[in-house]
Amino acid sequence: MALLEIKSLTKNFGGLAAVSNVDLYLEEQELVGLIGPNGAGKTTLFNLLTGVYEPSEGEVNFQGERLNGKKPFVIANKGLSRTFQNIRLFRELTVLDNVLIAMNNRYKEGLFTSILRLPKFYKVEASMKEEALSLLQIFELDGKNEELAKNLSYGEQRRLEIVRALATKPKILFLDEPAAGMNPQETADLTALIRKIQKEFAITVLLIEHDMSLVMDVCERIYVLEYGQLIAHGTPDEIKVNPKVIQAYLGGEV
Image 1: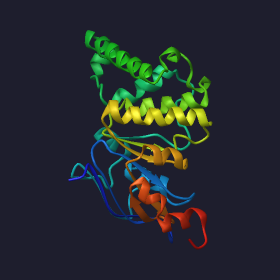
Image 2: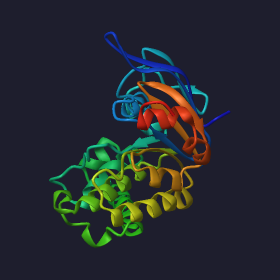
Image 3: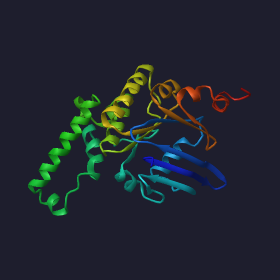
Image 4: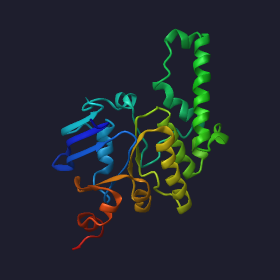
């Protein structure tokens, strides 16, 4: 059984099928790419997998459990976390607080423990902070833990968003165009970072990205969407020479 399996997944908005009859699977500790031209339905598919949208048809199964109709926070608690195409940090909070907030799904204290500030409250608080600082150190952000998120550089904000997603201890991490807006050096750093995430955190990664050099470099398998439909699936070498993929990106006859 695959870790995540999607069967005949469809999402209609009125008369428009943004995602149509998509089949997809992810195995444990895979790094898989999801590519396609603008408007192909990639982010819509992420929204279906993370509970932002409910499928019109089809199934989303995670570890054999059907996720259709479950709220985003329920899906996140089960081990599916994501970043966003447009960065969505808590801009007025510190770097450290952005990460601590993400841990609340795992560190839960009772009402009286929290209100009365019992010893257990301080013990949990210290554990959370230690874990958050350790994550920030891995991503070279520990020196800026008291900075407001809005004051970070663009590349640092991208890294912080990934740290926040990892703080939920996901089994699958969905990265939505993490290289968008980055310069070549930042993209090269991100490529190394994605490899590091998969290796050190032993999780599955599904990556949406327009930078084909990044996708071809890090992904083991690639899915290709066009107009909401899956037109190709294979290894990077297979995708590079697939006539349907070339036509989708370049247009005209191959």
